[in-house]
Image 1 (tube, rainbow, N blue to C red):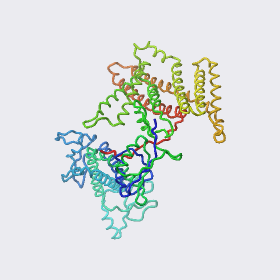
Image 2: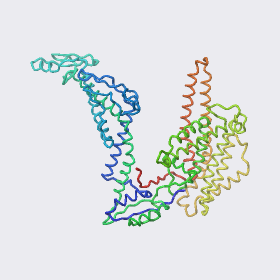
Image 3: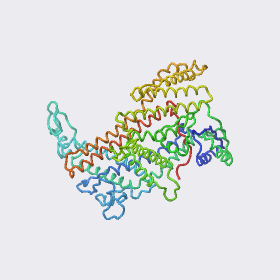
Image 4: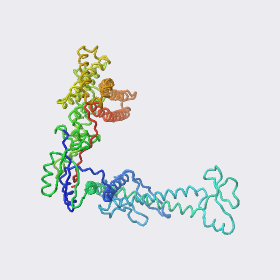
Length: 625
């Protein structure tokens, strides 16, 4: 169900405004509209959170990409920097600690023997600022290095000459110039002491010798490498920053709430939305805090947030809605139950292989084990638990489909070939599979229309909804006749279609609405044809599932058909199977996102009247410990 919401206006003494917000946050049952907040305090809080997230990205990238140059020449001396391809290798050979501890970077020292780990003495609380400052320095040094490289490219063809000597010759009347000829490659440059030949251009004298510029570049590169090495080492302390995320997010939300807390004279007030079942708790708190509460129903021009509360068995589907970024409108229906049921079926048919389902199920069971509540925790985080439950259901459905169709990694089990379901689904004309897809489709869409009719049972428009159900049944017969599954359409269904069409035409629009909605009746022929297309679209379940199976079969054939001795073809055979089935597995995941989601959020939702235009109920509450 979609939980009913009430609009709330909370009033308190102006001097107690901040304390009221703290109490409201601890209560955690009021949704505040914070979109209009724009205070300097909020900008500062958002900036602090953004800095922490940026620092984490910097550390993670450094840990992933760090590769140091083995030797960097600085002022004719050498500094040793360990060559690292994997951050896990950042460890002193004499250190007995876990190699994953990236704080052990004892072998990185500069020419004077000083450690290059600039974060060693930085407290966790100051780590974000230290990382950002180091990255800013590295960026500036990178720009400086680029400029030095450009200078070296410009003057390298002239060799390591002393520009001071050229200046002295000029001061003594000898017009020494650097020049480059037209169209000549960079190495074709020369000194000229007189007038330049026609078409040649003068190159300004450098500020210093080429060797001095190269030495500067080596020093800058050494410093860049040292900073990068230190960032890679400090990535072992990234949790010191990520652990602050909840508190920083709470700080942002509280600053936004302070900004929308309005004050008039001696009274402060704030508006929001509260679920009706949370009102008793809110009223009890208001009595103890001496708040004033004004509670009313939503006006026609207001859109409350959507709080979905499905039956307990189907509650995990809310995580899928959140992952897809969708929510039904507040005045629409909660379709969680049919969504989860049909999505499980679509998942199984689109993957189409029990072997793939077994892999997903095994990984999910491993996930259940890895996320067992730690000491001091009673339960797994709700979102983790929901996703694991969903994956368990979806993968189990896929395994069941593999049993019914006898499909396992593109192959079949010999002892199951004569099972009734395997023979029926394996009809060589594919007629049974198409019949199954169309039957699933019409059941899905008829459910939507009948549901609408039941919801409108006290209104004459319910007859139009039941009429649409009849139209869909007739179109189901038409589709099966078109593809040759049915030899004809029984005469009784023509009567069903006629009566249903009359109900749709007569009761979709009330007589009083003809002026404003009469055009809808003119669209009736197009809507009827659209219903035909909606049922046909469910054939994608068969087509995509069959494609997945055929791709798996072809890779199996490629692997097994290698014309080599057995001992020689084992490795290429395994590689072909791993790569082929890996790609097929990935494509199956993509097809679920495209087709299973579409059939629920478009075809079904269009007939049910769900626009997915709502926004989630997000209460103002503390998320940090």
